[in-house]
Length: 75
Image (tube, rainbow, N blue to C red; front, top):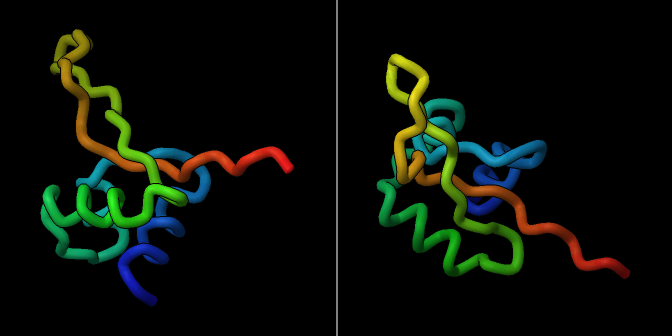
């Protein structure tokens, strides 16, 4: 299975951070390589930010870099 299929399978149900994708799939792509993969496959994937909080529960911006599946066009 190639990188795009591995990432698409990992985020089929909801968006996930790049860190989660690396941990759960074994892909060793850097953030830059994952961004390139998203840009090359913009018809399927979309960059997003995943909510991140400090130990006290305060939101940290920007969130973790992540990816989600692009919504299917109505048809």
